[in-house]
Length: 256
Length: 316
Image (cartoon, rainbow over all chains, first blue to last red; front, side):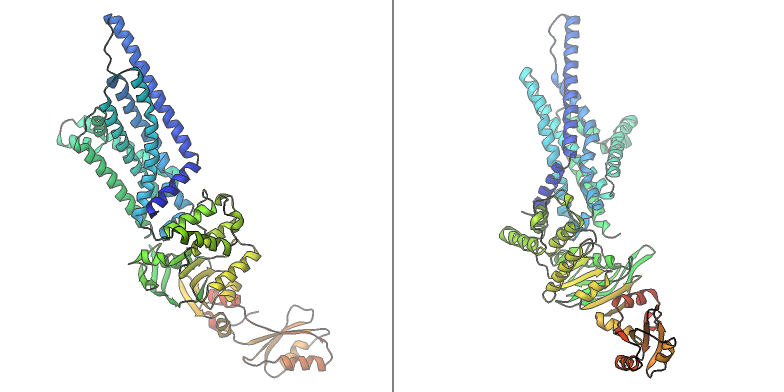
């Protein structure tokens, strides 16, 4: 096994030994289920209302009524849940002094960082796969356009990866896991709010730049089924930026 | 094998170590002795490439710790002060993890693990979670992981802390058995440990080296006089004065009553025979007679507590 796969295996093992993954998965899947259920009930109510008003069987667009709102809510849930997954990655190592072991073994910072990021991404992807049951059930009873569902998942995966990369960075900054998680929340919410600020400034050059920096509009397009290179570039770039910063932080710890 | 030249480490204004220079030959066991905060751990962290020195160079097995850290790390087994073990892994899982990261695999990894498990008597706990193990076992897992790929250089930060007396003896034997084939640096403030396992001792205090020598040489160098302890059954009231009158005796004084006296004589003169004769011929009853050698502990205290301790007088 290469150093990266060795560390990934160890990280996964550590995750599944601790209760964190189970609690996070349970909460995440439960909330996802409730949100999807509420969206479906809401769609049903609207259908009944339309039937009463118009007297005909309304043509419901499930993509608009169920899938898209669920994806939007999920972004908020991810923001709250993912920092809990990443907080231990470096903070725990430093607290328990195993960081010194890792840094004195013949392994590069790049490999350590890549392995830790990949391991937490794998857990997150596992969770996303489990949520697939909701569109599958929905498909059994109705018909809708699958394309926005798939691009929506792509959006969730990219958004989640960005949140995770941010979490890796904040975990590298401190040896306190709570601080790591909270810093990650704070940072992500601030970036989120850039989207609102951009909207206030409107279609001005500053407004556009600020809106571009936030992940909101990039996620929005993917959820609506639009795959645009500039959105993919945004995610790839911001994930790499976070990981490069994390690399600098981990590396610079040696200098203190 | 290890070559340290003028390394200095500063944390802002604070100087942790200043201009340390020493070498460790192949097969040599060197002890770092010093009070807490003297800079032992900092020096070890620089040698293991955990942190770079502010100034100076450190080389291990011919590789620069700053320029080629991976090459250095491959050749070092390091046991930090607090054994770095993953509590959620079992002993075997932990050793496998470390072994793989050290580049071992397959049969070599398996036999390597068996070897250290055997040497550190970890057989009974190989399947237990490290989090459930006692301090002594964790320390031994830490040592096992340092020895795992049989690296030519071992850096052990207080290797016997947390072990019981029997284990301490076992670990010292283990370290002694490494001498000759491995270069070992260990830090300790248990002084007999340094005497027991090391060929050379580096005493550091407040970030500076105050002495480097063999344990025996160090105590000899610092001895200003020979000291003899004598216990007499029925001492006359003026025994101390009468002892002082003997040729070669510098001073003699009552050491806490019960007929015990401490006699200081000129360096290089053994007066035991004269004193024995003197006491016996007077019929006072000789119970005990022995030389008091300066322990490394005395040397250590003098070097680290007095400025240029070598010249400080022996106080009683």
